[in-house]
Length: 158
Image (cartoon, rainbow, N blue to C red; front, side, top):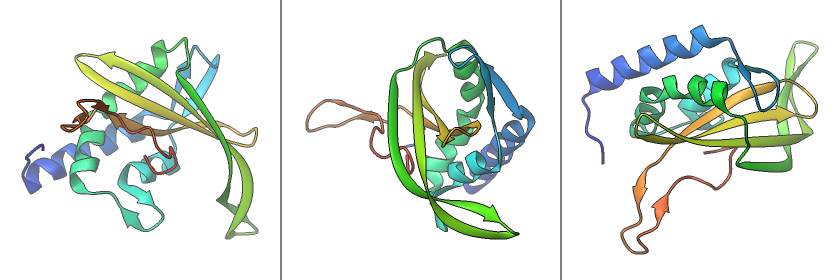
């Protein structure tokens, strides 16, 4: 378990948010198009679900490794996974947020850069823009099974 002070957490989070906001869009060779870094992706780094904040340790690691997200997307020419589903998404209709059932696709890119193994998730709703959704760090080993732990559950929450 990584140890950090409240001040260290605050600094890493602020630096990560600043970097995230500076990215705007990154060209990805796999898609041959740009991936947006919008408010939804930033919110997902802070919250596991709507109004359910991530643990500070989870946020700390994601923001600390945020600089790798753009690097991975810039060099990715192959995809490691795709997950397609239907889910209720919040969309704005006539100045109101409503939940609407939509087709959602999650694309997974896994890379090892600077001794850090990360999974980058890109989300696409229907045929809309592709957005950065998440960065998932390599967490460690399961002591009982001696297998690697890398979140590969529900990409909406990972």
